[in-house]
Length: 224
Image (tube, rainbow, N blue to C red; front, side):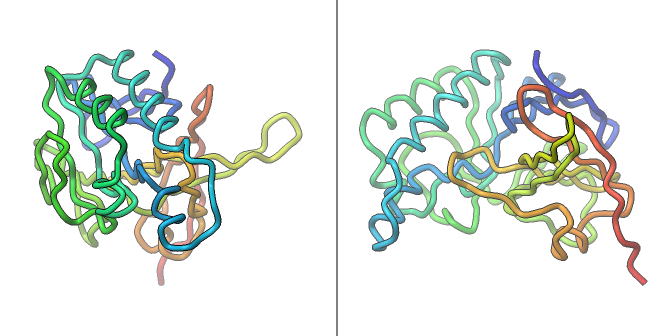
C-alpha cells in the first residue's frame, strides 16, 4: 500500500499519497473536503468557467482508494459538496457512482461549513463522529484531544532534488490531526499560516501527499 505509516492518539494509521487516511484496525477510510460540484457552483454564481471534470476526477481517485483498502466504513469529513445546491445538481451518473461506492459499507457524511444540510445521497449524516479514542469533525476545536478534522486544506513545502515543492499535507501533533483537502480544485493553506500556527503545537509533523508521501518536521513558533 502506497502510504506513510504513523501513530496518533495511540492508534496506527496510514496516510495515503492521495490524501486519504486509512485506519486498518477499524477498516475505515477517511477523506476530507471533496468539494464535489465546485465548477458547477462557480458557474452558477457567475464566476470563471472551470472544466467541469473535477467531480469525476475526485470520484475516480476515491474509487481507487476504496478498491485498494476495501474499507467497511468511509468517513467524508465535511465540505463533501461545494454547497447544498451543488449536491442537488449532481448528475445522475455521479449519483449512481456514489451509490455503487456506498454499497455494502457504512458511509458517513460529516457536516461541513459548505454543506450543512442533509442530502439525498444515502449514508448517514452526522455533526461529528466519536469512535474511541478519536473524534472526527470538520473544523478543529480549541483544546480538543485525539481530534481528526479538515476544513483548512493544509499544504507544506520541502526541498527535493534541488527544487522546492509544495503539496497538500496532513498536519499531525500529539493532540490533533488536520487532513488535506481531497477534492480537485480545492487549493491549500500554507502550514505556516497564522491560523494553523495557532492550532498546532510546536512539535508538528507534516506528511506531504504525492506518489511517495514524505514526512517532515515543522518548526513552529512557541506562543508567549
